[in-house]
Image (cartoon, rainbow, N blue to C red; front, side, top):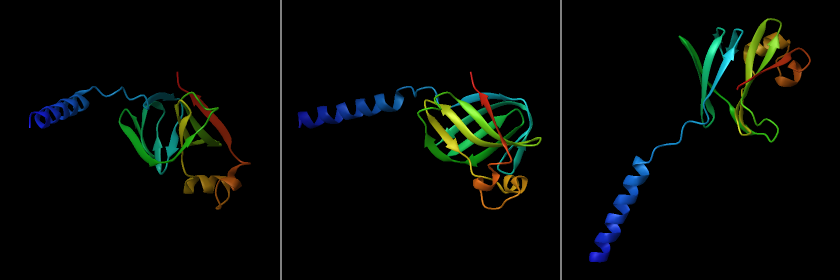
Length: 140
C-alpha cells in the first residue's frame, strides 16, 4: 500500500513538473521586413514588418493591421538552413511561395489561381518557370 502511494505521489510530482516547465521560446517564429506588397493565397499584404509563425503545415503571417493564414507543404533542406521568405515576382506583383524557418525547415506554398494567370498557364509550376523571377528576403 505504501509503495502504491509513493508511486502515485511520484507520478503527480512528475506530471506537475512537466506541466509547469516553461516551454521553449518559439524558435519557429521569424520576423521579416518586406519592402513591397505581396500576395499570400488570395490576400494582398502591404509592405512592412511581418511575424511568421508555423504550426505543422499552416502558416500565420501577421503585420500591423493585416495578416494572412495559409497552408503549406512542410519540407526539409540541407542547403536552406537560414530563415528567409521566397517570392515569385511577375512584373510588379510578388507572390509568397516558400517560407524557411531556419535549421533546414520550410514550407512550400501552393501555386495560386492568380499566379497561374500571371504565368499564362493553368497547369501549375512547370508553366510558370520561364516567366518569373525568384526573390529572397533573408532574415537576420
